[in-house]
Length: 195
Image (cartoon, rainbow, N blue to C red; front, side):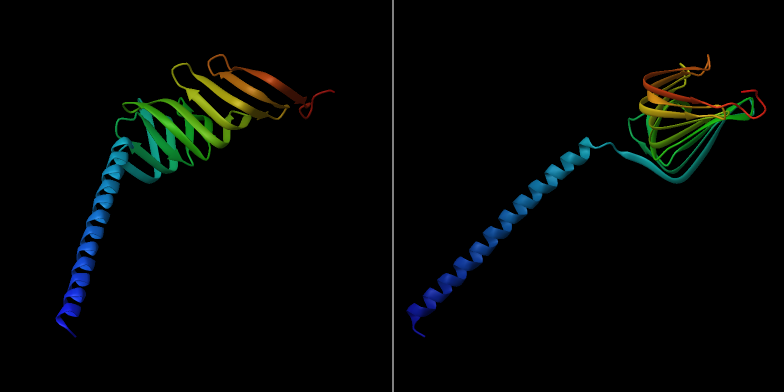
């Protein structure tokens, strides 16, 4: 091969090497920018402090159960007063006896220190209080007001009645409820009553 041919081959090889270096630097720069933007996204996400599987917690007052909370999974996030829960089950107690229970697919418990202030649950919600059973797609409970709210469709079943409708509000102190729309009720005589 002549000198001129060697120079051309060497020039092409050097040009290819510089092109590869430039391409790698360009990729590295875009990779760094991708990492920077993902780091920025991570800063905007809530920081997971703790994730607990098969969670079960009992809250007591003066030696008596007040509340029992269990879930398939519970997640605590930094700077968030709520606990996100998967397959939650909350059991309410009064004077040490079970008075009610809520279960659902997902939920959030709002805390003030160790006290549960509110509960929000969604997805196949079941709430039992005494002989009444309420089913809905969502339910929220405000402990301070002792109030339950269901937005959307709700159904209440008891031995003597079935009640369905929308937008249910229950005052736990008064033990009364109001269903605001599409109300349908079926009354049944209890066994032994004259009809």
